[in-house]
Image 1 (tube, rainbow, N blue to C red):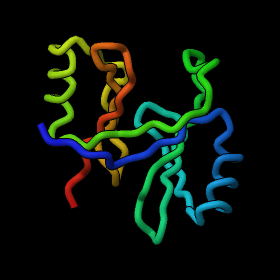
Image 2: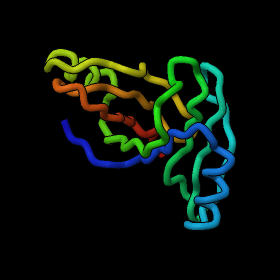
Image 3: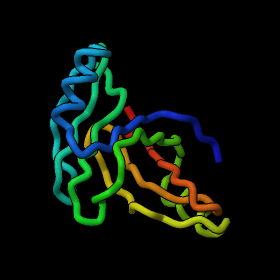
Length: 124
């Protein structure tokens, strides 16, 4: 199964502060959107191209998680990649969600518990 790094996501408790920082520091622009299950998400763009996103850590089960960057590895079929991870001793931590204009995202753990993001990009 082929993969490469293709999406970066900042998970933070203060999206407004992050947007201000990365707009000023990297010149990124941010487009607000809603996640399918509810909740805010911001797509970061550079030269009008999506380069990553900001995910707000606001749910009760996310309290105490420090802000961090999550790397997503591109896969051709996210469902098959999740199944392969489970067969190999990993687990699906955040089920697949579809981010309009970007693709399908999920988070798995490997067989030692390390978090790994997966993305199946939308065809263009």
